[in-house]
Image (cartoon, rainbow, N blue to C red; front, side):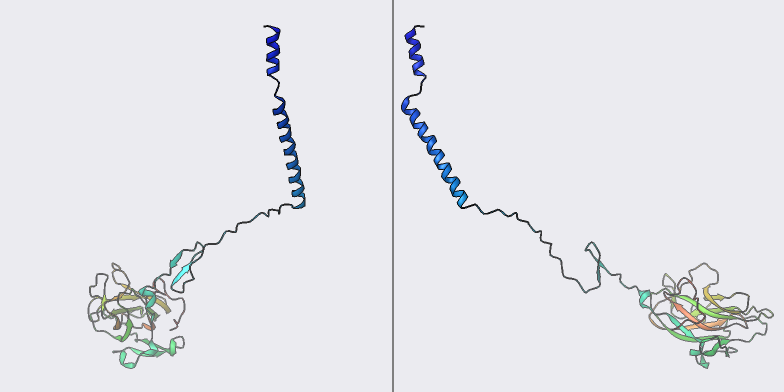
Length: 266
């Protein structure tokens, strides 16, 4: 390459004088603007930015209810249990002292006993003879009580076992009920029939609660009724010398076990 060509190329690489002066002027202007901005910021500082906190709003809850419901810890409404028929039916409690003389037949009579409610019990003298079960019309006590239809009752007798004599152990009473039905709504335990429950006491003398059970043990000991209202109870002496002072039909309290107290309060 010729020296003249090199000179031309070298000269073409140098910036034009006018362009360079203009660029230098723009740079100087930029520095002035930046300096003015810094002075303005110093005289008027920007307000500080305060961090904000977002509060979570608790969900609205339903107003408390006054109906038969209960609220659990998980805020789920649970219906209270509905009372059953058994819970609505009262305990049937009859004291011997509640009954009139007209409720007793034949040799049955009131005896005084300070351990009995009202100081009275009902008993039959013991001659050592035996008595026949229903439908034989042997000495019996008859009275009425109020019951509820469809309720399962357990029958209890507070029996006083007498001294044994001859053929009698003085520890049996038979029970019958009008309007009594079984679980299939068939009539059972009707007074004057051969259907009855047996209260069989122990052999030792003294007071004890005795359950009324089927003679053969093949059916349930519970008593049901086909209607609500008054029904007739018939307690027939099963052995001479036996006595009692309380009769219970329990739909709940003594459905599975005998009373622990000598006198059940009304």
